[in-house]
Every structure is written in C-alpha cells, then in structure tokens.
Image (cartoon, rainbow, N blue to C red; front, side, top):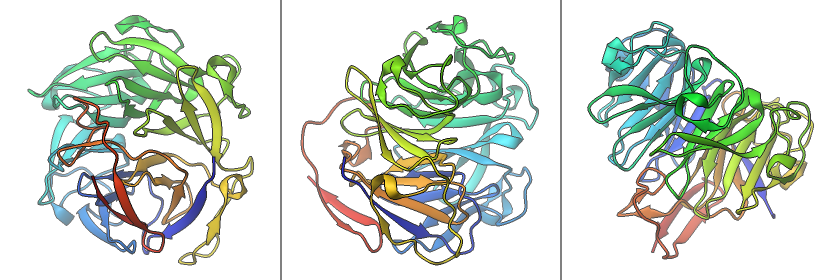
Amino acid sequence: MDTRVTSLHLPGLGEILCVAVASNGKRLVCTDSALYSLSASGLPTLVAGHSTELGFKDGQGSAARFNGLFGIAVDGTDIVLVCDSYNHSLRKVARNGVVSTLAGNQTRGYVDGIGDGTCFNHPRGIVVHANGTIFVTDSENNCVRQVAVDGAVSTLAGNGKKQKGFADGQGSRARFHTPSGLALDMDGHLIVADSNNHCIRRVTIAEGRVTTVAGSHEHGGRVSVDGEGAGARFSIPTGITVDGNNNIIVAEFANHHIRMIAGAAARVTTVVGSAQSGLVHAMGTSMGTCIGTSICLHKPRALALNECGHLLVADYNPGCLWVVEASLAPPHQVLGRVLLLQISARSSRTQSCACSSRTQSCACSR
C-alpha cells in the first residue's frame, strides 16, 4: 500500500493521549488534563479542562478537571464522551463545553449500576452505537462494559473482578487481558485491541460473543509478523479504528507500527512504521514527508480517520500528530453523521473529497 506520512505539530501541548474527528470534520485531541479542538492549521483551542492541572471536577470549560483522558468518542450530535481513566469515570462534554460525569465516582472498582453508583478500573476505549448505547473497555477489570441510554451500566463481555486471561466465548465466559482501543466495524460489531493478549478481538453486541480476529496470545508480544488471522503477530496493540471498507487499522504500541487487517481471511499487513522507535527532537519543526515504512513512530497509541480517509496517529512524541495518507476508505456517512457512530446502514454511494496536504483538512461531498 502506498502511504504518505506528514507530521502536524500542536504548539504548547504535551503528549496526545487520544484523537477523534467529529461529524463536522472538527479534530479533537486529549492530553492528560484537557480536551482541545484543532484549527485547520493545527492551532489548539481549549474546550474543557486545564492545560496542566489534574483533578476531578464538573463544570464549564476551564473550570472542569480531568485526570488521564485515554479514550474519546463523539456521538451523532457532536457531544464528546471521554474515558477519564485515572478518575475511573466516564465524562460527557456538551457542545458548549459543560462537563458532567456520566458514570463512575473516582473509586477504582467493579460495580454495575447507574451513575455514581458504578465503579470502573481505568477505562480506556469508548464508542457510541447508533442506538445511543455507549461501550467501554474497562482495562484493568479486563472486560467490556456498556452504558444504556437510561444510564444503566452492565458488563457485556468478560467477567470483571480483575480476572485477566484469554478465552473466546459468550459474556462472562470470555477473557481479556488489559483491553484498550475500541471501535465499531461496518457490521455493528465491537472491535477490541486486547493489548496484553497481543491480539484483536470481535464482540457481538447482541450476545456479547467474543472471537479472535487476528494475533496470538501465545506467540505475540515480541515481534511483528504479517500474515492471516492467528498466524499474524502483534506486540501490545492499543489504538484501533475501522475504515469504510471494513478494514481494521491498529496502532501497535510496542513495535511502533500501524497495521491493517483486511478481508474475511483477516490478512494483516504493516502500513506505517519501522521496527525502530522515532522521536521528534525539534519541537515546532515539521518532520516533512515520509513514505510508509521509512517513518519511525514512537509508541503509537491512538487513531482516528477523517472524512477523506486520512489517518490521524497520536504517539509519544509530545505535541505531535502524524497524518497518514494510505488509500484508506473514509468512514461512510449517513445524513452527515459518521457511520462508525451511526451504524444503522451501509452506504454504497461514493464520496468526493478535496484535501489540503498543508493544513491536513478536507472538504467532502457526495
């Protein structure tokens, strides 16, 4: 696959922990303590939180406090949902910047229920289904949780209680080991980066049935190996997204790669990255343009696709987003809302986009 990689520097920001693209094309990034929106040129504007101060507080804009924003999703009305991981809570950011707590209470634990009567243990990945249900990887409880429209939290797969392991199966019979990244595929199934099992899992929403898509918990963890299904190898997959052709894109944290899983055979290939870690040493200086495996990422951990199929990658380089043009299909849209969030139907129509490589912004039409 032909790829073109550029870097977009974000002045004044530290490490980017998560990244998302709203239905209107607005790019959002999170640091430990704050949520920002980005202009076309990459200038950040604070949406909520504080640039350096950690804490736990609901409120509007800079009055709110967070502690470890490791997961982000945007619903069909552009309300932002974040995993406030070290506060063991799920938070909601309204369009006017007002922050409220959806579930959790700062207490580490495992309790299903409603609102602040629930407990999480480092939630990491989050997505929103078309029906309004929110799904979360509760990483250190080793399970996938769901939040119904009425706010009720329940466990979809895995049994919580810190019982890590590896097992396919339905509901509480399944096992994970520190699940992190979470996405919805084009068929409405959850795709989970099962980080410390070094593999990618699929979870059916209706039944909570877990199967393994690619990778091996027995042989992963050291090297990257392209191949099909269980013959492929990952090392700590973290971030994950799905393109408009139902290809699964994976940020492979420990081996500094971006991988792609394609087709019914789950063929895994390496899209970006070499086996060597790469740091941006000159803050505010563009790394320029690189091709495919010539780029050296440094522990990539978060991914998002924009409306033109460009992949945004956040890694450990402070204040930097990598922009990957790799012939990926844009996420399909229904009534202007991203189908990854509004998964009710597929679209067979094509989308025409005009994109700027200078600003990494796109304007798309059907």
